[in-house]
Structure formats: C-alpha cells, structure tokens
Amino acid sequence: MPARDAQVGEYVQWLTVEKGRSRATIEAYERDIYAFLAWWGGDRALARVTGRDLEAYLNELRDTRAASSVARALSSLRGWWGFLIEEGQLSSDPSAYVTPSRRARTLPKPLPEEIVAQLLDGLPSETPVDLRDRALLELLYGTGARVSEVVGLEIQDLDFDEELIRVTGKGSKQRLVPMGRTLKSALREYLGPGGRSEFPRPRAHAHVFVNVRGGILSRQGIDLVISARALTAGISRSTVSAHVFRHSCATHMLAHGADIRVVQELLGHASISTTQIYTAVSITSMQRAYTNAHPRAHD
Image (cartoon, rainbow, N blue to C red):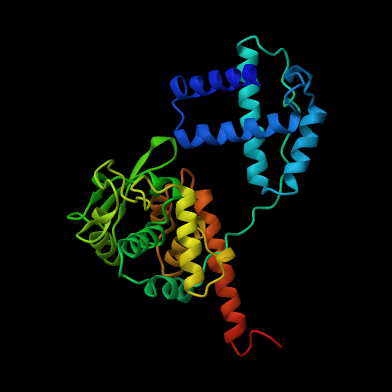
C-alpha cells in the first residue's frame, strides 16, 4: 500500500504545515484513515468507494464504538477525501451524502467521592513509582485535565509559588488551572529526592511523568497505572479511567457549589454547552439522594 501511504503522508503534512493541527489530532486522523483502508482492502482502488460502502463501514463501527467515535471517523475520512479531490487525486467524495447517526448523549459516570478518596488515600509512598503514581492520580482528579494534556505536561508548566499549572489543550490552547494543596504536596514529593530523579535518564527531557525506562509516560502507560492502582484498592478497573477522573472532578465541583463557568475554564471546554452535561449528572445524583432519603419522596 505504498501509494496510499504517500497519500496519507501528504495529507498529514498538509494538516501539520497548513492547518496547524496538534500531534494528537493528526494521530487520531491517521488511525481513522488507516482503519478504513484496512477494512477496504489494499488491492481495491480508492476511487471505487461509494456512499453505500462507507455506510456499511460506519454501521460496523457502530457495533463496537461510541457515536462520537463514529462521527470522528467520518470526519477524518471526509477531510482526507476533500484533500485528495483538491489535489486532483480523486474526482468525487463518497462521504458527501453520508451522515453519522444521531444518538442521545450519554451522561458521564463519575466515581462517588468516597471511592475517589479510597483510591487516592490508599496509595503508598514507598518507592519512586509510588510517588509518581500518587502525583499522577492527584493531578488527574485535582485538575480534570485530559490524558493527552497530562502526557505533554512539562516541569516548566508547574508554578509552585503561584500554585498554578499551565495546561496545553486542544488546538495548542493554553490555560492556567489551580494546584490544590494535596496535589502540590504530591508533586513536590515526586519531583524531590527519591522520586523522579531515581528513574533512568531523569534529565533526558522536561516532561513531568516518566516511565520506568525514563521515557515519557504515554497514555497507554497512564491507563496501566490507573488499572493497577484500582485493582490494588479493590475497585473495579472497568469503572476507572483517566476520563472518569475528569468527569469526577467536574461533577464533584458542581455538587459542592462551583460556578459552571469556573468548571468550563478548568476543563478547557470551548462551549458552555459541553460543561452543562455535568449539571445533569449533579441533578440526577440529587434526585437519587432525595428519593432515597426523604420520607415523603415515595409511596
């Protein structure tokens, strides 16, 4: 599939140079495009793809992926085909009349506060890996940062004097988020003697979180840390993830009276409508608690 590799490579270069897309966005586009090409087959001409073929592919994705993931796959392919048409490599766009199915937005499922406390308060502080994992999980819950933002976090982004963290989000947009006392303490321990400096090649790069080989801790590495720590704490691994920490941070803050605009800024949401989904979670939790606790809430 060398010719197709070249086509994808040209598109990636265009996204990087002309559109200024972030590395994470470009990697997601590449994954979507190559997944479709693997499904379509290496010996079939791309010009033969029809809208019906694309619908069949998307229907298969809907069996295993969330609606938002299917929509992104379609968007990735649509962008690529548009580029190929502009370059004169294709004459028609098979995605022109294809739309992703609309599904009701599902509410995020945050962890109860007591479960978060059980997980975080039960973390040991005996080894460099322990200190790293504590700082990592405290940061995920304390800031609501996306996992990609945590992967890219550098030491220079931490301001201990002002108790602020500079986070680089989607589209390379930067925002400042508070560094709570518990998080500050965890980060200081990890970055102090006996923590990050004990990993191999501690000065090879400026990223905050490193793996056992001294390289940058990847999103897959973060997933493994979360799974291992949840298992040790006796918490189902299927209920905990980096994104669940983000959901939990937002939901718990709103439940304790935080202004929705503050939560929007903290999470880096471009639109307030994205943040408003967490108000629905808070209301649902309130209704459940009311029904369970009020003597006249049920028959």
